[in-house]
Image 1 (cartoon, rainbow, N blue to C red):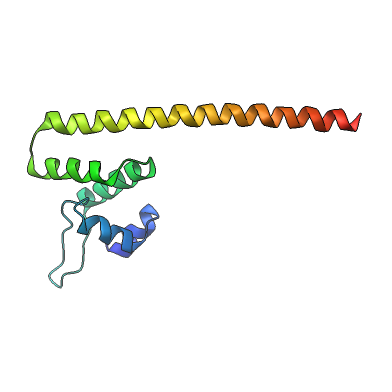
Image 2: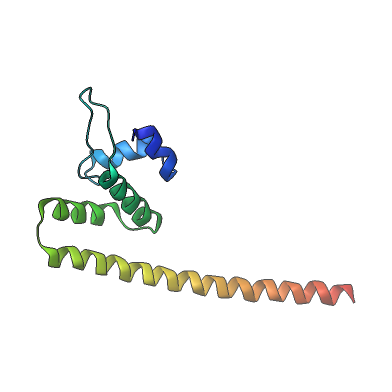
Length: 120
């Protein structure tokens, strides 16, 4: 699969995919003899994983460390720690989002009551 096809499939720009490869987030992208990237199933799984993690706000630095350890087959305990830490951060963020939604719901209901009261 070409970078253009992968770009469309995952809704990412080709430049973003190239950047992720350059900084080490995509451990290995096979290339054709002429040097053109030829994404196989494994490479697409990495693109999907990185897109998911970045979409959730996982830090690039944490992902680089994780991918580097994964690529080298090093330290499964540290890889797990990275994932646990990032999960905890996401849970904190989720709590903040839930609190904000509750506040917005309260304010919306308040305005609904004001608007209905004004119509009477």
